[in-house]
Image 1 (tube, one colour):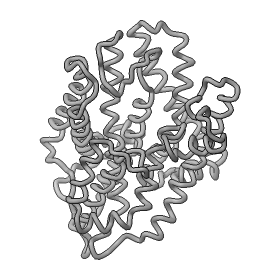
Image 2 (cartoon, rainbow, N blue to C red; image 1 turned 120 degrees about the horizontal axis):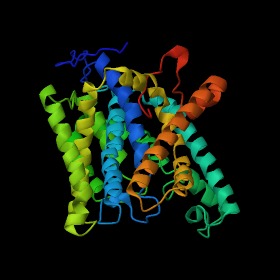
Image 3 (cartoon, one colour; image 1 turned 30 degrees about the vertical axis):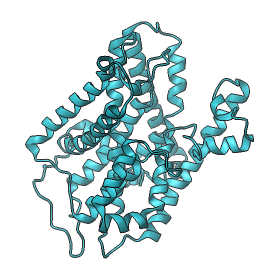
Image 4 (cartoon, rainbow, N blue to C red; image 1 turned 45 degrees about the horizontal axis):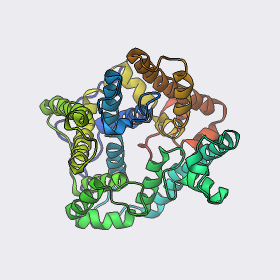
Length: 395
C-alpha cells in the first residue's frame, strides 16, 4: 500500500527561539524522495554526449548529426543541472535547522559527524577509483593520461586524481562532496553571515557564481551559494513553497526554459557568452524551485514508496556510478551503429539503467554480506531493520 501524504497549506509554527518551522511528515518524505531522484538525474548527466562524438552536451545542440539523440541528451542534462543546487540548498537547510542569529548550530557535533558521512567515504572512493585509473593507465598509457602524464611525481598525480586538489578528481562526481566538505568547514562563517547579512552575502556570491570566478578552494561556487541559501531559509524562517495551483505551471515553464537552452546554440550560432551563463544560472535556480515543489505532488504510489524506501542508497550511487558508467558506455557503444538515432538513444537508456541497477544491486549485496563496509562507503547511510536511516545526501 502506498503512503498517502496530504499537501499542507501551512506549517506548524516554529518553536521559541527557532525561526524555521518544524519539518512535517511531507517534508521528510519529500527530502527522502529527492535525495535519490536527484542523484539518479546526476547519473543521466554523467553519461556524457553522443557516443563517438567529441562535442560536449553541456554546450547544447549545435547542429551536429543525430539531432534527436543530441537534443534529448542535452535536454535531460539541463534538467539534471538542478540536482546540485537543490541538494546543496537542502543540505544547508538541514545543517542550520534549529539555529538562529543568537543560537548557532552545535558545530563540534556536526563537524565530527561529517568526518564519517563525508570525509572518510570521499577519501576511500576517490583513492579507490584513482588507483584503478592508475592501474589501467600503466597497462594502456592512453587511458586517463590527462591525470597521470602531467610530468609531476606519480604520487602527487595520484593524490590529485583521488582528492581533486588542483582539478576535478578522476571520479569527477566527487567534486561535489569535496566542495561540500569545504563549505561545511566554513559553516561558522556561513552562520555569522547568513544570520546577519544573508541577502548581501548571496548578492555578492551570485555574480561570482555566474562568472565562474576561480577561488582556489572550490571547484565551483554552486555548492557554497546554494548551501548559504538553504542556511538563510533555515535561520530566517523562509520556505520556497509555491501555492499548489502554481506548481505544475512553474515546472512546465522550467521544462520549456531547459528545452530553449538546449537548442539556443543552434539558433544563435554560438555556444558561449555571458548571456548563456546568465540564462543557465537562472534556469538552474528556477529548476531547483520547480523540483522542490513538484516533488510534493509525486509522493504517492508504488514508485514513490520504492524511491523513499531506497533513498539510503543515494550516496552510494552518487559515489559509485563514475567511471563505471564510462566503461559501460564504451563497451556497449562498440556494438552499435554510431550513426543511428535509435541506437544512440538505446545506448543512452541502457547504459544509464544498467549503471543505476548495478550500483543498487552491489550496494544491497554489500549491505547484506558486508554491512560494516557498506556503512563506511555510504557514510553511515544504511537500512537498519528495514527502515532507511534519515539524512539527506550527503549530510
